[in-house]
View 1: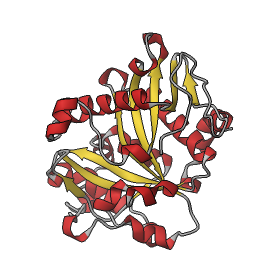
View 2: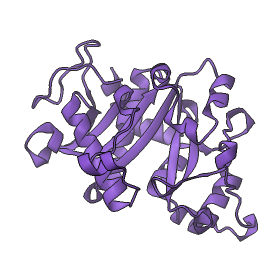
View 3: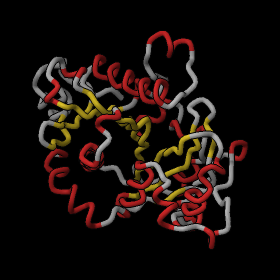
Length: 287
């Protein structure tokens, strides 16, 4: 749901009126990551999503999207919106936003009628097998072109990890995308994931039957690990580095012009070196 916070101000440390916690979840130099505090900041995040998904990547434009120049759907109203700010830009807070990630906790799913990923992957079956775990869906990740750097990715993950600690999240899930609607054009990368990064039976998630497309597209002996990794989008490579595993099958999303895979990342899988890297600051901001 929306964070119920004080109106936007020039103070990035403004606190949530309900929890008393700071909205800030991380900082690197002039860059900060925190949750959206009001409708203006959420609208600014939707505008950035439109610029990236529609203007840059060519997603199909619905009439309302083209009219409002925002990427918006029914999930926005019940999600938290993680935002990256460049405070060096100056001006109103919502004009400093350069990146965003959408976060949907399991306790908000009943109001949404399910997770966004349910339309592509059999997430409910996974959750039923792990009824004692707290799930978080990550989605709608995008960053403006001039900010697509290691620094911005690090700040996003610092914020996500602080958020997970703050809300006792056990499992991160969500769709990640390859560009284009022809899985065969990513045959080497998808085959690598199918053979080397599949979730085991306990954590496996299958694409819904009507949308299932195989990821095993070429002989595994013909796959070169270096070229397969080099061909993967940065977000998917980032998930791999953290220790994530991937579900069974991919899904073609015609509206967004992507080929989607499913990411599964229980927090205990995150490699120790990344916990050490993000952990100290994330724990401080999670308090």
